[in-house]
Length: 393
Image 1 (tube, rainbow, N blue to C red):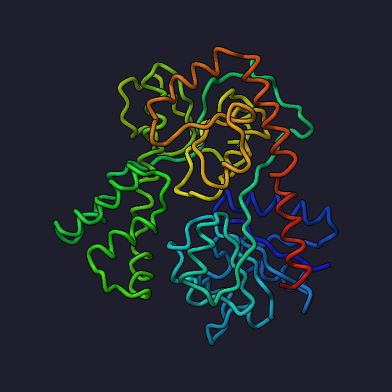
Image 2 (cartoon, rainbow, N blue to C red):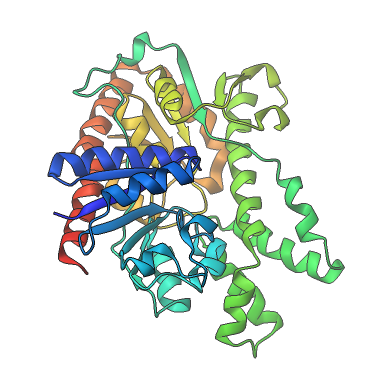
């Protein structure tokens, strides 16, 4: 079996994902090594003791290890992965538009793995030369295995949101940085996305670009896409804030854990219970104490978020908007509660209805646990990666 190297020490959540995968790989019989990016020199020394030529692969998230870190480059700027002929399986948890600069210079044995099927289509269109697949949605972690979660009636919190918030106005400097014409152009995209929230950023962007510049080439479209990450961030945080606002302003206490929530304007701020920023395990502990876990998808329209499966696996009812992929695996009013981003005004009544019917709430929680436990843990994702790695594809 292949030896597998993963990373921690940079983005905490992705390091936590790596630890979950490493544990699953070990159960399959793989030897694993987790490189600590906060301790590069000692980690490099340990890596070379772990490395076996022709039998070692890299599984990473968001280009860790191939983002230009100087300790992974030789004097000719060749990566260690190329020099040692180590294949890499990079799971990209954000839209590829954020990573054009890395995608233009990936190592030779690079495999790009998307967590959203629209991201896969984007890669096929703009980076067809890069080996891709399979589609691999994010997964969840069960903090207390074997359905040992506390029943909803004994939980401390009615509604919890784990995740950060950034006021959309912080992205206005990118929207207004050129002139009024560009400002109107960017706000036109934002308005369309907010009015039609199931559309992707790239589809709306292309529509607006081709309307203004019908002769735009594929390469020009590709270049523009890489400059529109602030549009993605603007709409993402706009709807995340609105969802929490609607619930809090209806008189329901929402416990929020993450940075920036003190900047969310509410008519009834007393219902916004501010918690501190937490690491991954801290978030899971809060999910173990909440009845309803609010999820607002990043602008992924054909994928999932780990918050969904984390909620289910820790005995919380997931209240979420949907995507094409989630429509295939989730069952509204059976194992989750689905709301429409186009009708956020319905959120408070949904929450009140769930809290008013404890037996039904618990039934949905139990169904959600069984569904996630059967198909959406990191062990399930590791099994898919194992087949890919061992086949050498």
